[in-house]
Length: 275
Image (cartoon, rainbow, N blue to C red; front, side, top):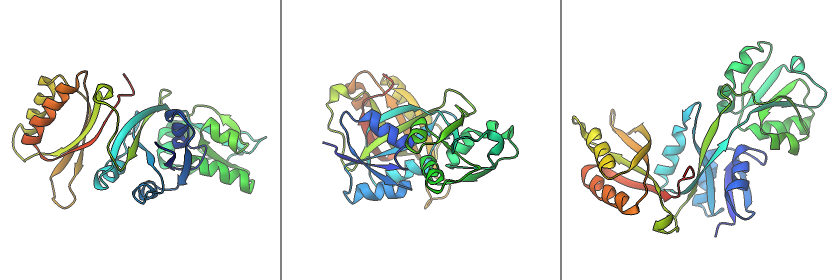
């Protein structure tokens, strides 16, 4: 049973919102400023699980988190998709003309790039966490300073939303994974998605052959991401997500790919949040 979870950011962050939505019961939330600390807490058994953003519909994969999961042999036990609405907020009784600086996480700034092109008087400054900036503004009564954060952060830290949903693309979704140091305990009947990692030889058609196996075994490829192997220049590891209706089809594909590929690894077998 999961009673505690590490998140990147503080209460009011999007990771905090995921913890509220994904777990059936209330869990203790342990705040961390970096994903490295999130993983460290998990490895040292300070928490039972961790929540990590893995990809965003606007800016794509969060590559360092793939590496953290792989290098530390973590297991994905579930996933959660969150509609990300970024709001510009500040201390009450200010307008956007009063805001001189906006601090936020680099990912949030990137997702709101077009909005700030129309506000050239505002200086954008990268920071560690969306909600932590909101908290700092409230604690230090920082006028003329804005944060990009969630509605929950505005409520928790008594800030006023100046502009709502300022992200470039209105449908802005982030996929989060829930990870543990041990594999999932859910039954095969409930498993219909898997995250895999493998490496291939440098020869013509090697990747195509693996993709054909997935297709022949009735698996749907929903994600493929390559990461360079730092110790071996110009060699790559492939991370793929597959969905399936029949666990036996997946087992068959897994057996074949284990023979075809190198360094084959199961990162997680879990329930598809989109099914």
